Image (cartoon, rainbow, N blue to C red; front, side, top):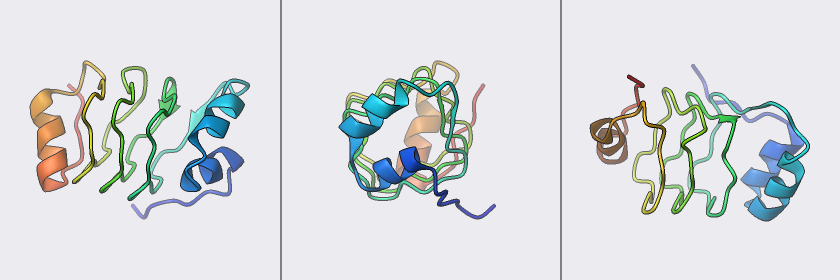
Length: 111
């Protein structure tokens, strides 16, 4: 499936690395669906990822340090070469899945 680049204003804020503004505007949203979106190489530190659907997303070489993804959907996402120090991942994704994704670019599978 090809990656998406939706015209969603919240997605555009993240593409522009305006994480604080995204977090402020996210508060008023009930559903945020970024499935299959491209986040390659972006600095997303400080992102409030709770409740966001990141299934199938591509985070190659992104700076994800310190993000709490525990309440996010990361099924099928790839974090190849991403910086993930301090991240909290959903409990249904094993450490081996995370490492395979960082090191080999595989898409993470949930258990």
